[in-house]
Image (cartoon, rainbow, N blue to C red):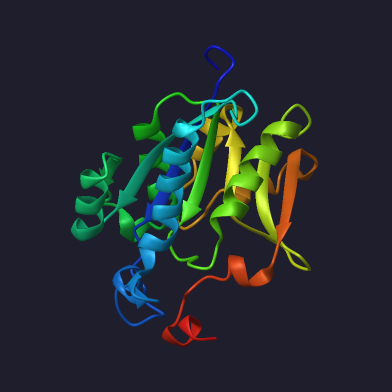
Length: 209
C-alpha cells in the first residue's frame, strides 16, 4: 500500500472455449453487445469513475488496474484500445489456472487481486462497487471476499489478499481460486446479492432464461 491507497489488480479472465455453448460464447451477442464486454466495461467504468472523485466525502481510498487475459485476438484488441494490460493466453487448454497465473504475472505486486470471469452479463455496476468498498471496510478481519447468491454458495468475482499470491500461482489444471478459499473459510467475507446478477452464461438458452 502506498500513501494509504490500496492497490487492487483486477484480473479479467476471458479465455473460455464455450464448449457447452457450441461456439465462442464470449463474442456472442447479449442484449446488443458481446458477452465479454458486459463485465469488462463495468470494471473500466468503475476505474474511470473512481479517478474522477475528488472531494473528501466521495474519495474511496483504492486504485484499480485492469489485466485482461484472453486467447481471443478480438478481445485483446479491444483491451489494447482501452489502454488495459493485455495478456495473450496460449495455455487456455489447461483451464482457468493458466489465466490466473498469467494475470498474476502481468499484474505484478498489488495489495489485492480481484478475479472476474467474463460470462456474468447481469452483474450490476453498483453491486461491484459496493462489494469492493464494503470489503475494504472489513479487510482487517477478512483476507478473501466474494459475491454470493442470497440463498446459495460463493460466486465470482472474488478478491484475495496478496498473501495468497504464491498459492494461487501454484494452481494447475481447471482449478480456480475456490480451491484456495475452501482451505480458509474463516477468512472469507461474503457479499450477498440477487441470484440473477451472478448467473453464468454457459449455454445459448441461458441468455433468455
